[in-house]
Image 1: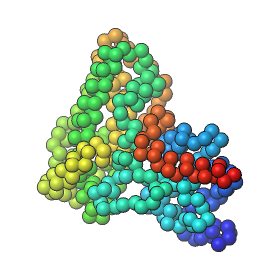
Image 2 (image 1 turned 120 degrees about the vertical axis):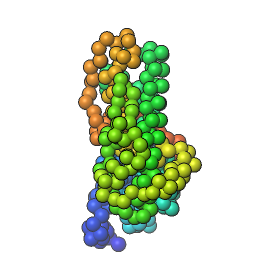
Image 3 (image 1 turned 60 degrees about the vertical axis):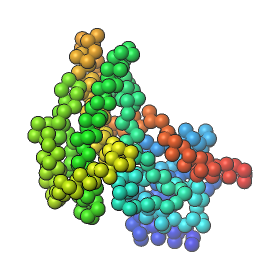
Image 4 (image 1 turned 45 degrees about the horizontal axis):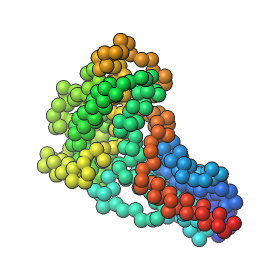
Length: 319
């Protein structure tokens, strides 16, 4: 098939990402290619990928829009024309393990946890966020430990409170009920007091949280027994936090940092006033900045070695 016919097939199939790939693809350039889901994904993947490539190589990441679009491109790719190790696909795990979904392909990378956002929510990143974004510098070891314990306690409280919600989301997915998960907003369930997270008094019971979530997405609520069984499934697979939706965790991370920042004088008496923040970031744009702080997951490093790095070595030897 000549290039004009390939372009026509891409347009007829309404696969914008594939068409963009065809526009950029050039086998003479020192470039590898990747397809990702959403607009924040390049911020996360680009730096991690390029840190594993030779200095004179680059990666072109193409946003597909949704996971199914990523796989649609994969299925349409003519592997007799394009090098499989030089064109890779990066998708979130989501709840695939519980839905019987599997992804086959040596050049398909699936996140270890629910999504890329889950890699960001840890204390090492929190400490950098406080220092470099919120201006909290000069903490001594004792103060760092106070904040670390508070962060870990908050994360555990948040994760446990969101467990029934994620169980309900799983049940909706299994029943093929279409719901907009963005309509469920964690900020409605929680409040903070002096940096410590608490459930809003209106949502102390899991039943109230579930009823509210169901009303927000206009879907039927599962029974208590169904929710309990789904929660057990989560906990049997490395704990609940691994499967909390990344965007919910991202809200927690940014809000927790903001609340700790504002409560600093009560947490660390040496601070008489709240340090001035250096940047204004929220849950919607924080990933753009802090993604570069994430250490490359072992699974991703191995994937890159088997694909992009191996491809580059093959090309170099052939030249």
